[in-house]
Image (cartoon, rainbow, N blue to C red; front, top):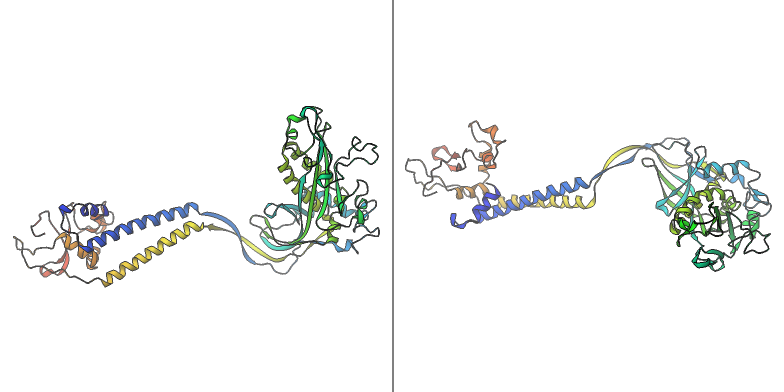
Amino acid sequence: MSIYETGQYAVHPKKRSRLPRLFKEAFTLAIIIWIMSRAVGLADLYLHTTTRSILVDLPANNKGSGSYPYAVAFNESLCETWQSPTFAPCLSNLDGWALYHPEVAEASYPAIANRSSSKFQVITLADASDAAIVIPGARVDLASTAFTARTFSARAQCRSLNRDCEGSEGSEGGPRQTLNCTQAGYPGLPYYEPSSVDLGTGPIVNSHIFGIVNGQQGEAQYGVQDLINHGQTTNPVELALQMRWNFRRDFGVEDFAVGKPDAAVDIVPPPWITLYAGCTVTFSNVTVQYRPFNKSWEIILEEQSSDNFTSVMWGPTVWQIGTDHLAMEMMPIVMTEMRPNVTAALNQYLARMMLGVAVGTLQPAEATDVKQTAPSLLGQYPVAPVIILISLLLLYALLAILVFTSSWLTKDETIILLGQKKTDGTPEEQSVLNLTQRWLVDPLPLVAAAFPGEDGKDVQRTVADSAVDMVYDGSGADARLSIGLQGMDGFGLRKRGVQRWFGE
């Protein structure tokens, strides 16, 4: 009997006798089980809909003894002391940077150009506040190898000064020109050629990165030697940037992105476009982890580098080794983007450039915790559908325990015949309602249904169209299963006919 048919029977009190307690309990239990089974199905569908497969590298085994030069260390053989004989930082002197170590200066160019021949690469980690780190070059095979390594990082924080400095507004609301950045904290910008008589109209220096030590900006001639303390600085370092590009247009520039009110640059005097920026750059010694399945790097430990190391690392930048390359990378950004995007790009490019021009001072070192990994496909299950499904299954189990316990404690009622006979002399059978009650509380009818006898319908029952036909041994809608003592034959099953006797 289906839940629907049972419900129809229960809601028509005039067509039935009073519902017994066991009937109500069984009907309620059937509804609960039906709802829970559908809820489990929906939860399972929700779980499999939101589940996704991910590729991870599972450690296969630790690599044996050998050389794994995946870490980065400073080449201390280049600097017997942190200061050169001119009291400037190591590798700096009056005439340039790394003059007596051309291999050190030469290594910077393929690094900032990100060429495969470079022994080191510099990348940006977006999830680490745009920190740039030094990693092994492209020729180093890191496939299926996970490890932990020491290296160096740089993180830049810049701001555009063009709208923070004093300037002159053009006639009739025309473009603005930056004149003095003292109020913004950078009195050395704009920087003009020292030979100019009138600093306000003389030739301005093109792209240049100025070092700042103790609040004093250096000049544009002798690199670190233009700074106080001969370029010895503290970490983080302070920089002032003045970058210029020739737009090749003498009019109509205001129609481009560079002419918008929120642009990061000046567009006068034409055809020049000028960017002024102040930057703070922090150098750090970091420990990173490498995961080969997605070629990702993660900083797990970071400590600020020493002032002596920082003074060496910023030397090539103040000597303008990478200034032209930085200007080239920034040009398409300042031409097409507004101030927030220009600043974000400058943070990334400047940090990468400052590490790239100094990679000649670095050398490979041994990595630690090196493991051979095997790519494996795993299922990733969201927390919410897993918890829902487990909770429903636990409720299902609790319900099963409850049903089992209540069945165990239910008093057994054996079917007892009243002894009356039908008109044809056969024993009178119990009513359908009485038999239904016994079906719910006595396991013997279920056992009997599993062994229907040699009626030739054993196989057909499993594929019957109706749930009734799968359980009851009958062919018509009025056919029912009689359960009880059948004369001298004992307890068994018997098909009832279409006729109904008054006592049924």
